[in-house]
Image (cartoon, rainbow, N blue to C red; front, side, top):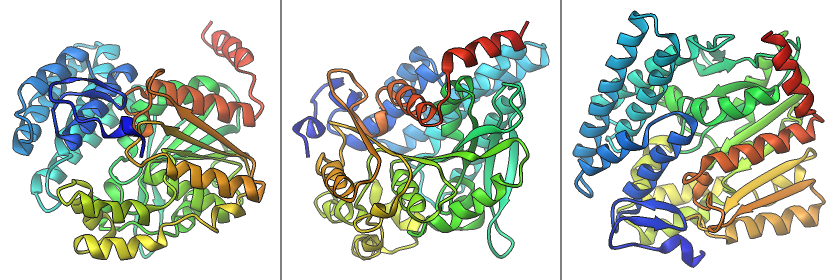
Length: 406
């Protein structure tokens, strides 16, 4: 693990992994930096987020929920007033902020706490108000899974006039779900001509909370169902489907692309390669918030059962079957440690996989896990890389969008 990733400041300060607002509290610091990073993508304001941070005593999870909810409710009420007054753009912008604040409010609640579902419903409600104000409007879809269950998703079409569009199928990881991906990806994917399908896989978002669908190592199964859905749409180019996953979702994406050959390019954002190694490392961090969350997501009891289950979540000997271009992004201050991508690089190079590795340095920022401290850098690089793989001329696309709006 890089020394930059273990800095524990005694006062609030900027570290190689981003702004550390709560001295000595890596879980709070990461989640605060995550919310703050959303400001760049219009999912918050600096003043509002710093005000929330000033009201939360270090380590107080009840205050965390209370203060983020308080700010979310202020914004939701403001958005509703703007909508009623016909202030379309203002309402759209504020609903996005409210969604991110509700998402932050939910984070540290226990999975049996009824407030978790109540708060999650507010996240989705605000996100969907935002999606309704896009042009064309985003769609709320249910993708058939198994035994009457479904995977909740949002389909967001690019505004270009191309009939069949290249599409990025994207999902989060352990605790990120489709609604957070809206503010992370829309402003980068759509102008480059990509449509987006943002989905909650088993163990994520609404799949977990509403239906009790737990995470599974064989991600090619649910991803295959999602690709089946995409191929029913006459506005998706079946030869230009990209797969993107963040954090644990990056592991899922890499695993899925090893078997699901309808995927044409794949992105592992965050470099997760060996979940078992990470799980074993949690023996040194018994108070980590990762442990109860993995218990919920994977339906395991205690750290040792999680460690045993995590043996299935390893890409060694699997990812070498990938036959399409693969991008792995990683930050040098990532808490996973640089060995995660060193192992991946060694195996992929030896197998001759068409593989690109991008490491973000602390000097340029974006060096935290999944570029949480500066997500703009990550999404710019990732969407450009996918565009290059598909041969998209971005300058020509810009001219086309200008003509469409004449």
